[in-house]
Length: 378
Image (tube, rainbow, N blue to C red; front, side, top):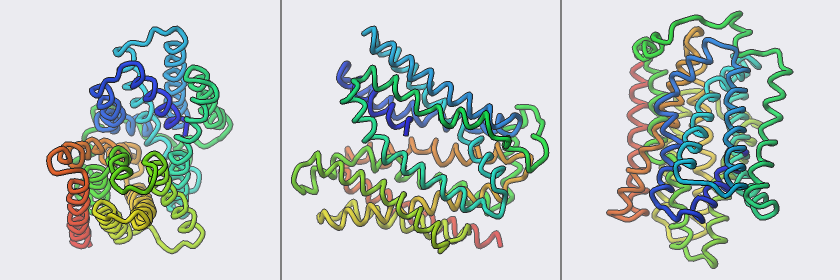
């Protein structure tokens, strides 16, 4: 939630001050490119060191970036180069603690309860994404950008303090962290390639990121205007809420009922449903149907990502779990850059509705190809 609050406040100030479309584009690139470049290295850190300290390092970097924004807002000295540096550092903070967080989940609950832990973690991340814009807007209006960004620092503190109090390190169930040289990190690519189920799940996550990824949120203003359901601003908020609520409600229902287990077919079918519901959302002119499809896509996306991530964790070699999770993060997050081309750039040529529908349709086909790869693996 704190991550999203910072985006709400800083993106608003940057647009108000500079009115730069190029800077707005850099905001997206700076957030996801570090995942593509540094996720493997982050996984290596999680493999080698106490995951509590790796996560805390990421949290401290988040807080320092928020504090730097606050000082620049307070002094009125913000320049574009300041913004670019802080945006990149914020993206690096997100990369730093991603694999370590997943290893902590495994250490907390073990293999048997891991699917539940991953699903609940994904559900509450969806809740944070859902609440972040609302809380960020309240802080922006109530305290102003300077007070709001300083207040946001406090939201990082509970997790940071908790990690001083827990005995779990991310390695307790494995007795000790793996020791290796960082030159060995890239070798994980060759070492896991023979496990087709593992590779298939990493590919599946990357396909979802590449073909749809962050494009739903970035193109939502277009759909809010075109659906024509009263005030465009209100429609925009409702559409965003529907997309986020699908992940939250779906995750809680699935966890309570246990309907879907951690299996490759479940991940593939959920990805196909995610793509198909996105296609319907892209082409429909009916506001009510669009809302339903966003909720469905939110549920399907949560099932697909949490299931794929669980399979990756369970199949990753113990000594390489962090690096494999880094590879998964590089695919599932770093390849979100691709949706800027498959939906955004293509939308400038054929229209956003058409580009999103075609891209989501390609996701369905690609997911079925992954299923075929997984079947051969058996």
